Every structure is written in structure tokens, then in C-alpha cells.
Image (cartoon, rainbow, N blue to C red; front, side, top):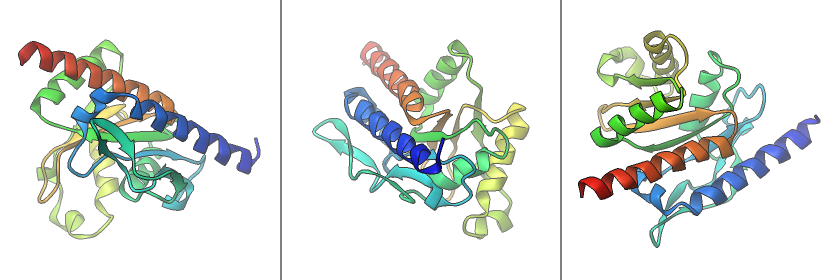
Length: 199
């Protein structure tokens, strides 16, 4: 497949994933303060410009997830760097989404991962060396390596715990944006059911 065709296919898949996400009211419950981004990288991507993401991130409008802009190349920094680093351990990872993390969601996601044969992991930011956290952009290799060392392979879904000035977040990885959003919306619907039972 030509590079242009691949890029168009990725943008199309990302647009479909955003549309699916925007139709899932339940996902609004998983919206973190930093908002959500959804990314999909070109094969062999080495920079953020080769990773497509939602320009302006995804927020909540009238109770539904809402994309602030269209999918575009280079629209994400953090999630783009995460996908590029993750691919060093699993070249099949192309896409990812972040969402809210708290103690209830951790329990739910652990169960979901077990039921769906997904590898679960977490990053302990308290173990991050001071020289790594002090340099901008240098913590991503350390974080991904910690995940792989702890789980034995790159997890499909993981959370990053509290850090200085950092909101705890979940990240879900997958082969494309549509499949990633399918799992994220499944989790959101289960979270709503759980909240309805517990009040």
C-alpha cells in the first residue's frame, strides 16, 4: 500500500473511532481533567508529525464526548511519544487512548483485562529517578521499560499513578483506533453499570 493511501486509511479509521466515541454517553464518566486524546501512528513513525490525533483533544459537551477538532498529523505530543516508545517492545501497537483513573476504575479495568485476555500493568511514578523526571521528554523510555519489566511484555492497558503535578491516567493500546475505542467504550458502559449498582 502506498504511503498516501496508508495515511488516508489511518485518518479514516481515526475519524470513525472518534464518531463511535462521541456516540457513547457513558464514556463521559471516564473523562480526565486533562481531557482525552486518541492517536494512530503511521508504520515506522519516529516523530509526532507521523502520528495522527484529535486536534484540541476530546472533551464533554452536553453530556457526550466531543472532539474539539478533526484528526490531524502532529496533533499530540505525549500520546504520540508513548506510541512510538511502546512500538520498540511491540511493533503491532499503532493506536492508543487515555482516560480517567481512580481506585474504582482500577478494579473494574483489572477485571475487564482478565476477562478479555488483556495484559494489565501500572507505572509507579514514585520510583522514577530524579534525573529522569527533571528532563523534559526523558521519562517516556523509563516508563515504558518499567511497564515491560513488571508485566513481562508491553501491557495492553495500564495506568500511571500520581506524580508531582500529574493526574493519574489509564492508557489503552491496540492495533487501530476503532478497536481501541471499542474496548474503551466497553469499559465505560461497565463502569456506568457498576455505579448504578453501588449508587
